[in-house]
Amino acid sequence: SDKAAFYLTIIAVAGGVVTLLAWLAAGAEISFAVARLVAVLVIACPHALGLAVPLVASIATTKAARNGFLVKQRLALEAARGIDVVLFDKTGTLTKGEFGIDKIIATIPGNELEVLQYAASVNSHSEHPLAKTVVNEAKKRNVDILPASNFRRIPGKGAGAKIGGAEVLIGSVSLAEEFDFGLKNALRTEADALAKQGKTINIIIKDSQTLGAIAFTDIIREESREALQTLRAMGIKTAMITGDSEDVAAWVAQELPIDEYFAKVPPDKKAEKVKLLQSKGQKVAMVGDGVNDAPALTQADLGIAIGAGTNVALESAGIILMRNDPRDIVKIIKLSKLTYTKMMQNLFWATGYNVIALPLAAGALASRGILLQPAIAAVLMSISTIIVAINATLLRQQKI
Image 1 (cartoon, one colour):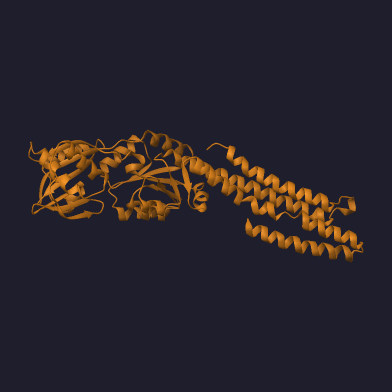
Image 2 (cartoon, rainbow, N blue to C red; image 1 turned 180 degrees about the horizontal axis):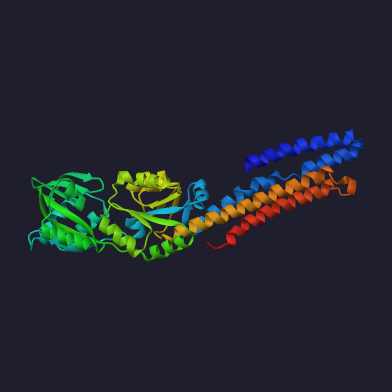
């Protein structure tokens, strides 16, 4: 709109000069020709054109903040209206991310506390939500946490450490499969059954021997169901991405329900799934809260971070949700569409006004006795600017 206002100013000045010369060439009096020049210069309204977009954008940003989300990049809000699919990270976004231990399974029955002890000892060095849950459970049961050294993370799969000279690993079933640690048939059967109920399974391995497993439960947000239902009603596809097993992902996808899901996705592969959706010609919004979501947030056409998430995720996103409420995604898209409509209305008015007013000011209908005096032109110019401003402020009253 700033460029349009600049060009309109050039057109108005050039049009005014041409009008002056044309009327003089036609034999009009100098006073009449000058009056036409002044009318053209006065009635041209670059102010309205210059305000058409920035004023609406400013009001939209304020409205967004009042509704619980911050617009870091104006282009991000503009992109929201064209989104075809919303890709949600599962943990902490669609689910509450508040894990509880559902069951501890020991390869040797009766050794459940030993399984918990080794798991907590490794996890005492980790900030992962599952790790914190294990450590808290150990403290609750008065289980001693053993000194651990050489702690290391295994991205997307788990972690490991040295405990009393033994190498201890804790992580997903895929971690055990990667290191070729066989699972006892009974343990595998029970773990698979729990996974199909939506439980997240961690396997604990000590010196290549499977000690047991821990099953975690996470709670699906009720708001997630409402948000997904509304998005589908708006014609927007929904998708979920998670590092959890196929069984867990399938259970959550069925419970919500959700159109498409990607399971067992390592952190460094999430951006590739966004690219996959984009390769189908879809505009993708990614919603996440963790460090491992940052590349996907950057790759997406619209990156949306949960306000309670990590700093890296917040830096990578164009819009930040201040609440962990997926329903705010719907509000973002609705606000984007309303903002675009207001911008188009203002541009249409400001452009249409000048298309009609400039020829009248130049005296195009003077032969029919229709002339705009400079004073009237000044009033019309002011009215045009006021109309654009009032139309923009109406955005404040609209519900999202």
